[in-house]
Amino acid sequence: MIIVTALLAGLLFGIGLMVSGMANPAKVLGFLDLAGTWDPSLAFVMAGAIAIGLVAFLIAKRRTRSWLGLPMQLPASTAVTLRLVLGSAAFGVGWGMAGFCPGPALVALGAGYPKAVGFVAAMVAGMVVFEVVERATSTLRRA
Image (cartoon, rainbow, N blue to C red):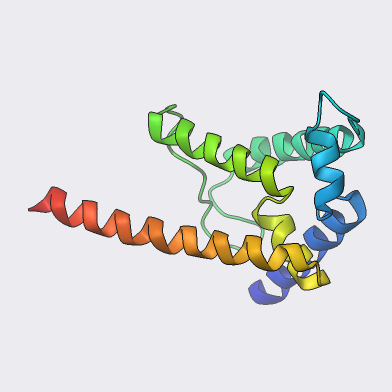
């Protein structure tokens, strides 16, 4: 049941990204181009997503288990660290350069956008480099 629910949630999310235009890099770049031909339509998509997310987090905070019976796993830290700020900045720069963020990039890859291939490859490479660096620094800290 959990796998079917995850599949349906992912499918709904992917369809939402396609319908809203979030998987179209040209539309995203148009939204981010405040000084040029700005396309504000994605602001409504984001506002809707934020509103739904706020309600979902309010409900989730009051629960210890999900509706499927799994334990709730909410972020424990609210600290704003240098690492968080730098990661957010890197995310924003990548989003602005490519017009993709991770979720829509995977949807675009599945939809056959050629630009998504390079982005997803770079994203996976970045994840691998991050893991290698994390393990190396973790090992150095223990030594």
